[in-house]
Length: 326
Image (cartoon, rainbow, N blue to C red; front, side):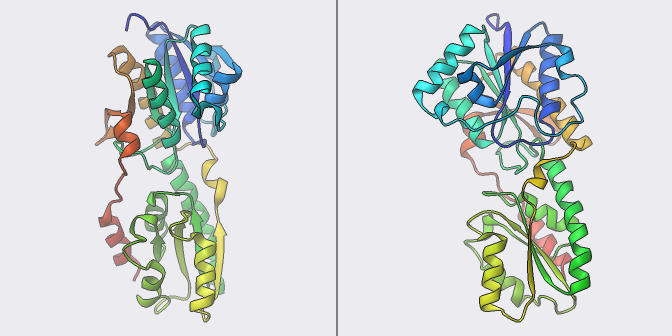
């Protein structure tokens, strides 16, 4: 711990609402505890291109309410190579950065884990992803805001669905996880959610039709995770046209709408707590851990667990959705 005097911070992968709140919390908590802080722009790519700036308290003023990330983000294939990571390490040493806080999702934390192990470099991860798919934390930064955005969009789409008596497939993000689709469906009173977690167990579309779709309703809304495992909204719509041609189907793909917007109070508080906890972790000689939250308490989750373990869906929520959609 005595060797750490300067902390670098970066955001990587897909942006998530609340990342700025996390940047603010890491920066101010570090300065409060006597550390220097340096912001690294464009994720791991910024380590290769030397886009690094000294961060003071004023650098993170008036950003807690902003979506996106002031540090920008980018994919970086070069960082996936040993040569690229060596260049990144050399950049960190040249700037006298002694520890790294990485805000991002599964791929970002995987990169942090490899880098930390190769160079024995202290890295702390913050779970910044709207998919909520990282193991060891009840919620990830950005998930609540994305869920609220989905709710607002679906509420508007329902007006049209009801007026025209149609079946709407609404595609939401979640390539490997159905948290947004499932909880979004419950929050909006949707008839069903088609998610990757149970796609190998049951034909979810056939089940939807056989359970009496539109038996008592003049319209139906189904949330679909974008995962190739589910076929996505377009794939399901094509299947309905082939197998159930009597139904009038429409598709809405929410896409990047879900990533944007001012973070909710829940995400701002979560990001602030996790950002401060990242500095606490470094002061406690922790490394190679992700900051998580379980039962409203901060926990340290080893990168190996956070990345390798699949986060299970709460199957009681599936049953709740079935009961409420009759």
